[in-house]
Image 1: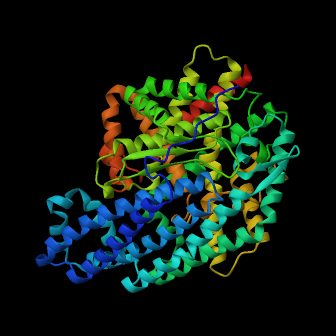
Image 2 (image 1 turned 90 degrees about the vertical axis):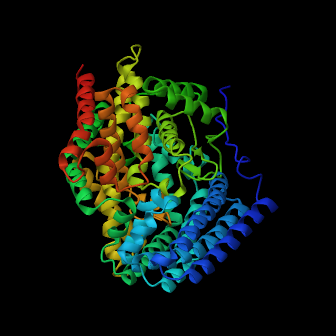
Image 3 (image 1 turned 135 degrees about the vertical axis):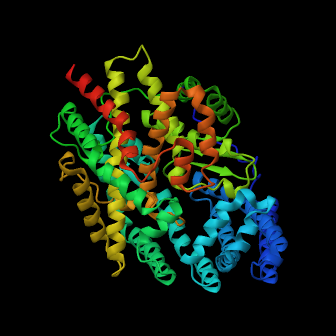
Amino acid sequence: MAPTPPRWDLTQWFDDFGSTFDAWLDDCAERLDALDARFADIGPLTADRLDGWSAALTDLEATLLRLQHARVYAGARAATDTDDARASAAQARIERIAAAGEGTEARIIDALGAAPAADFEALCARPELADARHHLSRWRQRARRSMTPAQERLAAALSVDGISAWSRLYSRVTGGLRFELSGEPIPLAWLRGRLQDPDPATRAAALGNASAALASRGPTFAAALNGIAGARLTLDAARGLDDPLDEALFGAAIDRETLDAMMAVVAEKAGIARRFLRLKAKLLGRERLGWSDLRSPLGAAEPVPWPEARDLVVGAFERHHPDLAAFARMMFDAGRIEAEPRVGKRPGAFCTRSYLEGGSRVFMSFTGAAADIRTLAHELGHAFHNHVMRGMRVWTRQYPMTLAETASIVAETLVSDAQLADPDADRDQRLRVLDARLGQVVVYLLDIPVRLAFERAFYAERARGEVSVERLCALMRETQLEIFGDALDPAATHPWFWAEKLHFYIAGRRFYNFPYTFGYLFGQGVLARSRAVGPQAFHPTYVELLRATGSGTAEAVAADALGVDLHQRRFWRDALTGAEADLKAFEGLVAG
């Protein structure tokens, strides 16, 4: 019997939700209360108060470091067992403590925004804060996007039982949701794996039955989505923000010109993905593919045992650079990966990190599917990003989602590069690898744009009132057909995707979609530079790029590290040359 994929070891963070954990949270709460009073006593940011401001900011950063450590532990425990009441209670308590910290942050943001430019510059010039300039500047910018400190404090407190509560409810409900397949109850978290089954009837049944399970909770999901969006729209209006996308752009550290340039090229090059789907439909004996077929494999492939997956990933990393391979081995050997598929786990995959420890943990459900290997490499890429930033101050390790995907895209592409370079790979194996790579192009050029277009349309309708279950399904179907065009069977869409996709319900993020397309294209651009220069020669630049991701906007990081202008469409077009080459290779294999 093949070895079972591992469970992670979280005891290096905390033993359990016992007295030590409770005391830790008590200490965080007391520190934040004291800091709030301290900032109130210091008063406005002026030249004669720089010492007090600098010391208080440094102490706040240290306290938030400790609170974040507890938060990632509670989140990791909740993800592995959605029925764990203690994990849920711990998360709720942490949210309350964090809300108090956000109230203090609102006070700081207001003061930084009101400070004279000379006094703000003097604060940033302090040696102990010199590398925090970007973070402090972002706070100063946010002052123009904020309500009064008292209002922001109230909003943060209400979010615990508002937006965050809706998000927690969604996670609990989906974590316990099952759908029937071949007489067996299947966790919703396993749907993605079932949609990679070689049997089209199995795929169709999996999606159909999962949709029925989602429909059984449709009113709950609609209430959660409406509640989250409604609260955000109310806060946006109070903060003077006209477009719900504005806050997402600010959080992603890009401007609208960059997004517009990127999405224009995505629309321009979407034919790559549509052409591939039409070719794949012919290979599968279909006129068009349905949603359940988008991840379908080309031919049956045996599940890959965990040890083999591990060796494949480490070997691919080794071909690129020994530092990356050594890091991956450490992650495997140190028990930092949670990969065992079991009932009660949250759907999806993620990498979580503790700023205090300086280490990461990877979460997924490994079933042996080819996509699981890519997911493993992807999340290890995130972990490597965190690894090279260890030891840096907290505020410089907080990078935006747009740049967060760089290392993960690089890592998963390295694995497929190694598979294509394997001299023993036959035609069918190469077809499957190219199918997977082009399947990712479908995700980033079609699927992600569907999510962006759906969410924009949903927010527009939500501004006029609550959106019904029926309308949410109709809106999702309409958007899928518009973006996929004639590559998608109109009789086989996935109207319940709005309920299935966790990304729409994440409390701290809205429009959790376009950063993935940005990350894919930016990562491909980085890889193109690495191939041109050579991985060994480029690696120091790559590490410095990753280390800079929390210290500037995406445009600034790209300009400094790569010398490119993200406002220009050329960069985005060049990033897709690899996808175009993959399509030609796929067409050649199909024709041969």
